[in-house]
Length: 287
Image (cartoon, rainbow, N blue to C red; front, side, top):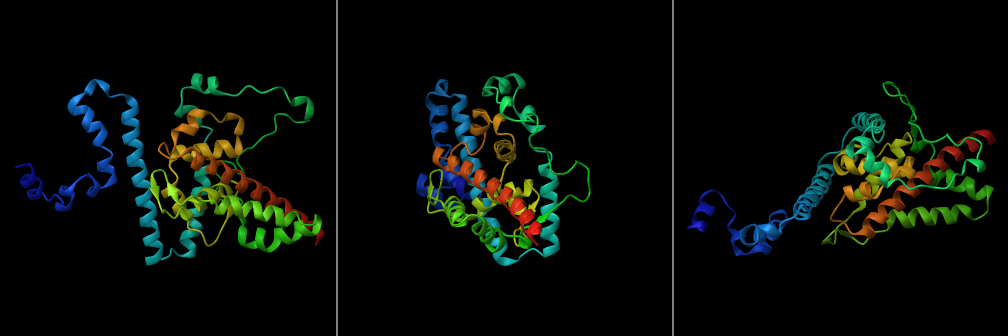
């Protein structure tokens, strides 16, 4: 009777062959259904979190697949890509300062803060730190067009000229971290994560006002959830505010090694952004 009703309401016949034939997001419900049916007193908030995050994972993979298909079908115009970059750049100004403290109770946030020794004696301006590169509400925010001064075509050769072989070492470091992949996403194998890695790297550069003409910044908004953006900006711009709670709040089903890779990408992206600004200034000085 159940099989007949399932088919009558448009159910997919193949799913009736067993759990291995149903979508992953339905398969993820198996454990909690088992407990609900037989031992509901064993259900904890962790079971709900696992189910929620596994749906989360499937949704991310679906967005990656859809974006790849859209890219192959039709590319956005240069004007549209510029608009998307400006939108993402402006939105990045609102990440962290409000989200960090409102996403988590203030007292809990303070409890997670790492108490460090006083280093002010070693620096002249201890209060100097990151601030958004433009005031909120400004219409025309400064932009560094990466095509005008790239690491590959400009920075690499200049830094090598200033300090023999350091360019090769830096370039190897950038490439190794950017290209590092296990071809996995949590429990999924044989996954091309290039799109996701590029979104992480380019989002950091976006926060520093660096734009790539050939990149569609709509992908950043599709692939990076709000909690991940909060984590990215905190680690990149306010590392002393980073907490384990923030680390745990995104990609909950990913392996720790995959999330450590995220940190490596963020740090290398920030370092490259700093170098691009510095080396461009040196180039202008020399010419």
